[in-house]
Image (cartoon, rainbow, N blue to C red; front, side, top):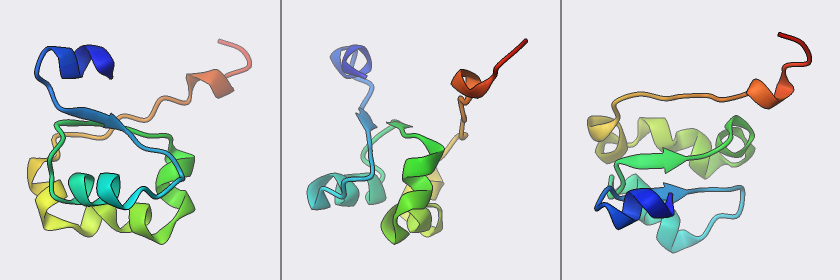
Length: 74
């Protein structure tokens, strides 16, 4: 994330702690990249509702879910 910010790509990592300032910035669509775990996005009503927020979804290009750490065997 720091690398992206250093090259002028606004990015943030969110977790299950709801920092009101971060929540508002994400909802306003201020970031091009938002890192989060699926568990975080489902843990609170605020993050679950993020995909209903027009400012966020207008800029949304895609959602990537990386759960490779859960794979026991390839």
